[in-house]
Amino acid sequence: MTPAEIRDEIVDILSDIAPDEDLSDLKDDVAFREQLELDSMDFLDIVMELRKRHRIQIPEEDYNHLASMQSTVDYLTPHMKDMQPS
Amino acid sequence: MYDTIIIGAGMSGLAAGIRLAYFDQRVCILERHYTIGGLNSFYRLGGRDYDVGLHAVTNFTPKGAKKGPLARLLRQLRFKWEDFSLSPQVGSAVRFPGVGLEFGNDIELLKSEIAREFPGEVDNFECLLKQLIDYDDLDQAAYELSARKILNETIGEPLLIEMLLCPLMWYGNAREDDMDFAQFCIMFRSIYLEGFARPFKGVRLILKNLVRKFRALGGELRLRSGVDRVKVEGGRAVGVILDSGEEVAGRRVLSSAGLVETLRLCDDITEVDQHRAGQLSFIETVSTLDKQPRDIGYNKTIVFFNDSDTFHWRRPRDQCCDLRTGVICSPNNFQYDDEDGELPEGVIRITALADFDLWNNLDENEYRIEKLRWYDRTIASAVRFIPDYRAHVIDTDMFTPKTIRRFTWHDNGAVYGAPEKHVDGTTHLKNLYLCGTDQGFVGIIGSILSGISIANQHCLRD
Image (cartoon, chains in turn green, blue):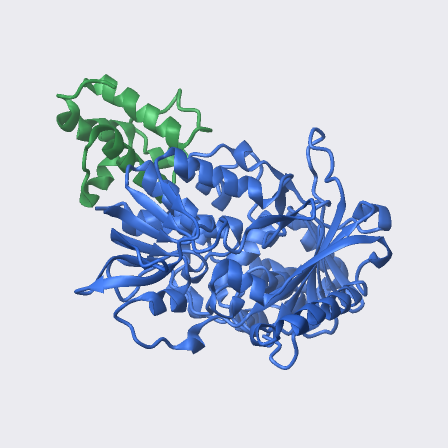
């Protein structure tokens, strides 16, 4: 998957977790927490959805990489570059 | 071999099951009873639908709200707001002799009522609001603080303290006399700051949605499958043995049976300290009326009454029931959608404190007679605070602590479980966890969140 495809996938996951959020003007360099009403349970769900959908295991010490869209895509790119978009 | 075995198909067990099944675990929920729901269940009798447990769903927030326990659990379980189809209350009240406080789903009403009845306490009440701990900041330490002590330091008028405590203790306090400050904060938020609502179809709608989702995700639900013991080997739970003798193997066990009740199931424990079990149980009378309650002058959703200036929150011990305080609830008095209309018949339910042993020790004949006797006494007590509806009753039913025991399997038919809560859900075994009332969250929304949070903390991270 390309970084753009990974971004689309994260948006898809976010829309599953928080169906009422408007994700169309999400700023990639601003923390999710500052733009969306996500709590710690929701962050766990991003991790869990990645595991469910793509079998990616993210260790707990790496959760901080999922703070914003940009950092998430950067972190996931090496893990997902060889995968096919779903 | 299951990834997780869940004991009990109440709100917390079902919610935990949904979380785990959604993330591809093999999950089995084992329920001793022939139906789901535990404390919050429902039945049909003589052509009429009855709810057990639920008066109202607390923690109501309107559609679109992103904060608060309701919004959080809908997201976590991938439900839409409409799936719970909640209609807000009309309005509720606390009534003590000569003084009443109305409240609704907007804290401003309660503030104005306090300003009217206790003008000197307006600032103190604001101080109390500032001291409330946020849901996310509650820890074990907050469970060890006394709510009465903090209230005494904040509020000057003892009567106001009793009146504020009355609904909160009624809807979620497992401890006699006093309340843990954490529990006080949870209940205060859920009742006074968020508020009451109810699905038109009652608790069965929520339960059916939970079960449908659990099954659609591949979860297994087995009714009439009581757990006789939890099999322990080398400090770990390795599975459970059912009443039938059948053995079910699992990598971990999540129990909503209650703390004492769960420990008693464990192979490695020979004696359990009974005194840790909860003491507080209830009776409830359900009266079907020939009119809508508002047509006989009763238009409140819930009225909490107490017949003196001091609120007594104790197991009765010397008589079957204590009728000095009670809760009056009408499922008719919610703001249902026009398309739902109104419930076909008027219903008024009265709940009172009751003693499990005294009810349980009656023989069959005495039990039947005492039910009739206490039905009459309970309603006689309640109509001191609301219009007398006795001439309009066309059908009745009643549950007692024995009924609650049968539905929940909790010692003493304790509605809110044991006084001592285990917020982190851990036990003496590293793969046996508690969810439900003894983990600390109560009420419909609380118990669902309990299942979610314990599943998240302990069952999803490996």
